[in-house]
Amino acid sequence: ARIVGNGVDLEGRPYVVLSNTAFYPTGGGQPHDTGTIEGVRVIDVEEVDGEIRHFLDEELHSQKEVEAAIDWERRLDHMQQHAGQHILTAAFVRLFGFQTVSFHLGKGLVSIDLDVESVTAEQMAAAEKLANDIILENRPIETKWVTEDELSEFSLRKQVSVTDEIRLVIIPDFDDNGCGGTHPSSTGQVGLLKIISTEMQKRKVRVHFVCGDRVLQQLHRKHEELSAASKLLSAPEDGVRSAIERLLSSHHELEKSLEKTNEELLSFEAKHLLEMKNGNIVKGSFTERTVQELQKLARMIVAEDNSVIVFLAAENEDRLQFVAARGASISPSMKLVSAAVLPHLNGKGGGNDAFVQGGGEQKMAAEELLNVMENTIIN
Image (cartoon, rainbow, N blue to C red; front, side, top):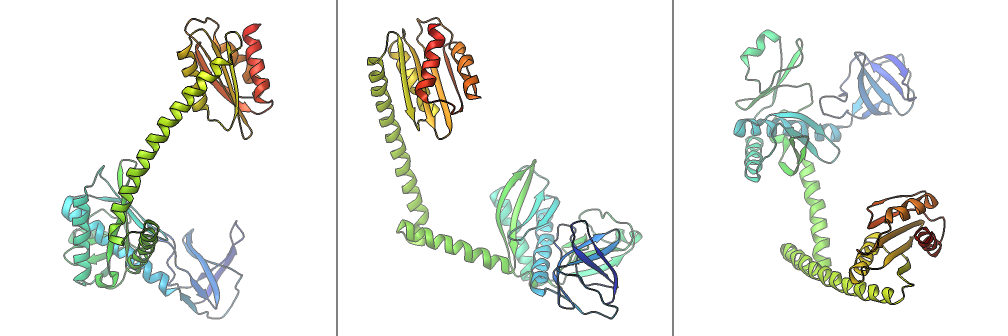
């Protein structure tokens, strides 16, 4: 080809425009090709204002004919994934009438969004099987340029968005679809298709899958993870699931035991703080205690003695948190305490007349904060 245009985009990337090109520009859910032009790396390809711009990692100027080469490994991968998408999409349509509304070819996984709110495991398995049957049959994948008037001769699974120079990608007796992407010449070249996972996306089902060499890559990665898990659990690979279930069961039992022990310790701590009360005021300062623990402790204390007021504060890294509670027979509102101390902390809090909590910047020690809280009630 010849270089018929040069430029630099707004990001400072140099580019050339060729008299003709084999490089696919980003579009239709498929990423761009990479490769070289006269040995200079092509890092991106985009269609801008009707011209195909080949973005380079350095400037290139030549009046002579230049030689360009695409990265074939990348192109073949994209061809496999894109053709696999056509096949899987057609399988969902043929079996269940599920239409695909979007397609994305990522670096690791490929995805389609089905225009339905749920898909069963059985439906996924059936679509995957049909797709692999079509791949195994090694049907030809044909491309054909047609006019708008000729479209009625084909069973398109969706309407095309262009009106002239319409390119159809055809898998005989299975799928006719308007598409400008790259595809192999037969379904057998897709190799294999495997659905990896699904997720909900804005009332659509997103299906993640891979084709061709990516299936082997996924298998290799998952085998490494399974092998590592097998060694950690000291279990055979086919026994990893059972070993994890036993481990989780043991973990849940341990959590329950720890929770019960913690409740007992908090109950003992509440009684100890009550013994240390000054008049009807109970105070306690701590470090690295969660506000949830402070809340439990305060509720235990006022449940044990409804005639006390409880002030608790904890220093957590650069945060200072507090809880204030009153027994049922005490009248002062704890909201007064919260309103008085929060400005000292540039903090936020909430609660009601009987119980408040809050926190903010650690601009004073926990003991100082407790004194401010107590003075608010005394005054």
